[in-house]
Image (cartoon, rainbow, N blue to C red; front, side, top):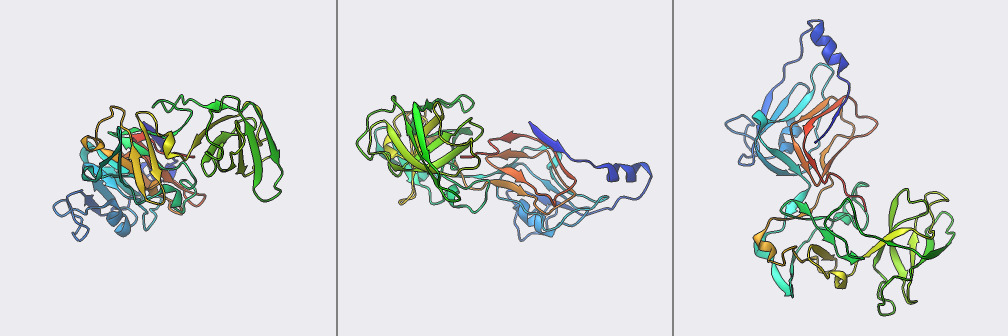
Length: 335
């Protein structure tokens, strides 16, 4: 459960004083509807965005049960006495999802227990600060997040991941440009020289206030990795004992529950937790970071709607937003 309520004092005050509240129009949305319809309960729209594109202050969109795979950007703001409202119809189960389905018919056996399917989109290419960067893709099996192929291996418990720790480190000051770091780890398993070059280092630098991802530029020396990173503050540089893990290698897909997306071929490789064919399950891949984009919008209410693999964004120009009764899963995934 997640929810955030912004002040609605002007609206409450208007009601207490007996002032008339603006009456808007009701729209209806259903997965079986049509965006060419009129938006009535008998002829509902198919997407929430269609309703959002025509709604003005005082209007309400009642959304019927189903999963809506879209990012909703209201065309207008509401007002103090007439907010724009998006609400689940009559308590029905409504989900705004940032993930799309990998068709069951697209899976073929790759090798062993690993299957593959086309995945033409890549979250890292979406020009949105909340989803850019290596590691932003997510794969879900029957609603549970799976693990990107990595070293060291971890479990599906996202709250307690297994990580490695550096034995030592150095760095080169890059000024206003990229900095270069080198980490050492006596426990890094033996791999051919250059094996990790071009892969991704995920590391919590310095006092470990935040994680960064960076490309590995050299791995020719055993138990040593060189990479580039952005210095966001002098303490945030490589240090002994920093937590890290490595991704970006198909050959590290070596246990159930792991996946890997191969960029040039836009192919998703996946080993399900049971080792069975993914076509027997619902497999979804994150595609959109936002369920609702409320930047520069005010007096918007979102009520009783679930969020899956996507979140809600606002900015300094957004005021009096009400998020009430939202069921949230995997709303943000920051590499």
